[in-house]
Length: 569
Image 1 (cartoon, helix red, strand yellow):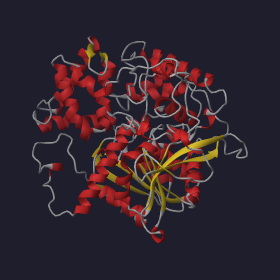
Image 2 (cartoon, rainbow, N blue to C red):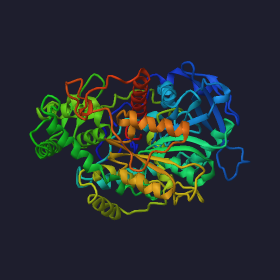
Image 3 (tube, one colour):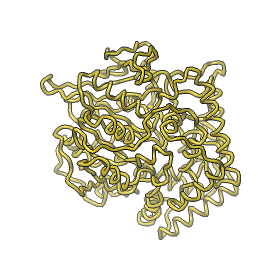
Image 4 (cartoon, rainbow, N blue to C red):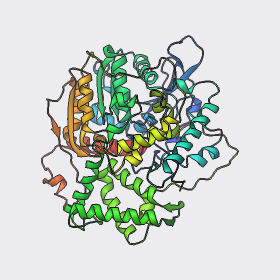
């Protein structure tokens, strides 16, 4: 395990207890064999029917005549409909910033097509600088150097400001170092162009390369910022645009994520109450009341803070300490329907003195490499991409250590439970100094878009509260808000026939949900042993085969996107 004073990977957002890379994705296709072009030249890739291309775009859209360009990696699951029914590309961004849209479609392209229809090309792209797109965002000369400071690009561990009296100061110094490394390893000045406004322009370039004028897009988490920025810059180019897990847009551009924690403690409360209600068979960390579950977790956390536990597994070794435990709990809030029961079991075993189970759920495999090999030119640069894009987007953050301490103390008033972890981004951005003059920094919004946006939020989301969707809808008059009655980050945490039926209707027919529409989910936080008890209702026996297939497809999409990113949906 890394030092608790250093944030070794952050994908705010999203950001979940999953491996960050789809197994085999990188080895199945060599993007370096492709040549970027201003037009799309499709090559079979990965597995049929997937096709890949590299699109050449200007590095600097303010100087498009400049010979310096970027290459955007694009994969499509092609439409199979007749030409007369073809509806063009439907772009997807899984979040981050730093998430690979390529990996998302490689893993679930068929399922996207099942949900939205064969009339679309389902398109995943890696934003400039991210994953397979080039030039790659990197702050290091070798992989060994990278892994010394960032033990994993895909396993997230936030620093905790209350882990010790020096935690904030240590984190601040580490981020200042990382910011200096970014400058030192950017001799060509490319990092200033790795920004959301340019990624939005790239999306328009992709759309136009397909021969269409208006964007069709679904973005989750950071993808909501990207979508809203596109609609602000190009309101007349909006074809269909869904943003899911909506960030506070103008707060994003000021690197102030405090209000994104409005529902964090409420999300945590669902673990306490759900565990108490579920009983000991469904929740291994059970206690008769929610307050007792909370007290037991607090006592266990204090015990681990006082005495961390060494762990050795077949895959790695490390220390389960206060920071690790706090992150494991926070991780579960992002994906509760898949994680709460496992977290409860890990906590119960930990309370008995055995840390192996909980550690193994979140471990980082031991790093091995030939230390003379340069840093990878492709893939798994999630952390650096997050810092370069999110912090490069924001107005300059020049906070002193004392100001950051006050920022944290103010954040505790919003989330007493997790401000110490989630506000690390502010410290991260205080260390990043690369910015481009004239870049877009808000405000987000447009009086009129060529088609209304659809904004979606969960009842309780630990990092993109429902209030953000309502607030952002006011910035785009005519837009609609859809609510999914669930806990966790974005609607992909649990399948909902209702939610996905509205998604499909919006893309296919342009239909918006009525004001106040709320969709239930087909999942339990602590699944019971009764197979008929899903969400407290008897399982339906009259549904069609298509209904079942679409639900299974939606479940697969959620699983794949969660694997593409940990906290960065």
